[in-house]
Length: 191
Ligand SMILES: C[S@@+](CC[C@H](N)C(=O)[O-])C[C@H]1O[C@@H](n2cnc3c(N)ncnc32)[C@H](O)[C@@H]1O
Image (cartoon, rainbow, N blue to C red; front, side, top):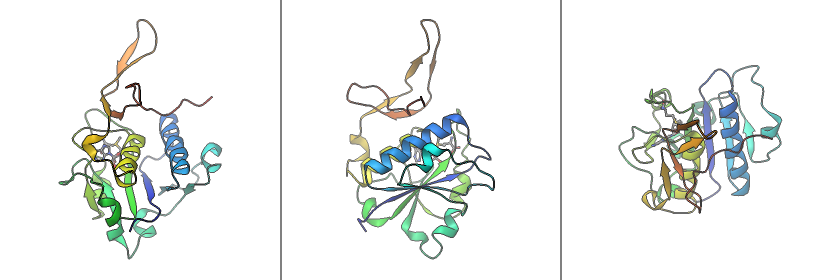
């Protein structure tokens, strides 16, 4: 099953906050660049899909939830779940067609809202022990199942400090993929 992969983010918040929007735009652009598909599912009535997302060919906005979208082929969907017993591995790219994520902003301590998706009974895989942002979780999954990089061979940076000014900074309590200079890959702020 090494055909085109689909990344599904089941939107679990009633609205779309500005930071989630930037994360979704980052996922859409990377899906486009890597010939994969990105579905933002379970969108409530009246949900305003930003044009920056609509303009990306790889992106689909869906009112239906993942259970309806994959009715009768549940075994093809892998839920990325911080509480799963097994870690994701490159071979999972052959076993699954779609990878499912919680459309939730990261929180500290984690509130385990992924449990809302776990209840639906999809096979789960963990991306290691540290909480990632949703766009990072999709990025790492893509690297493992498409680029066949083992989870422990991905370059990470944990809990980076973001500096806003000389005196103001904050520690981000998440794991990110590191770029070639060791900096965390984060969504680009919109211009
Ligand atoms: C920001 S995380 C949300 C974690 C959160 N604190 C919760 O309530 O579950 C968003 C999504 O990224 C994925 N994710 C993040 N870190 C993960 C990990 N270490 N293993 C598996 N999935 C992860 C999950 O699909 C999760 O629902």
